[in-house]
Image (cartoon, rainbow, N blue to C red; front, top):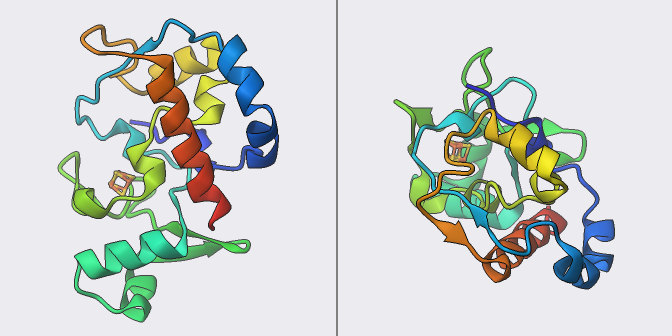
Length: 165
Ligand code: SF4
């Protein structure tokens, strides 16, 4: 399993924002993209990536687990530079909330998790999409074709969550 390195969320949201309208008219995925989550948990693992969380997401997860913010921070968060990320549970980089390939905070999972694979880094090019597909069996699964409007909306949701870190 491999948590994509794009879990770092380090792509420039500013440049994404400024070019968003032109991207929509020029995007290589004009005809939509095939994806269906199989629940394999592969996007929740990998030693190189991070699951970044903002304050609103931290509160949502803490409330979901009936923990105070301090308790949640001590048990589940790590500081990386100026930002907060979820801890890994082992050297393979499995997210601390991953159990038996399932997310144990699924109802309150961060927007980064909700919006995979509609991240700017994954959508950058056919090549980046295919690279993500090496780790995610749901990418290019033919059962569901997502239109560009949905893809752009999810990408925007991801970018907004990162600006609130
Ligand atoms: S919070 Fe849940 S969905 Fe997100 S990486 Fe962790 S286990 Fe996966």
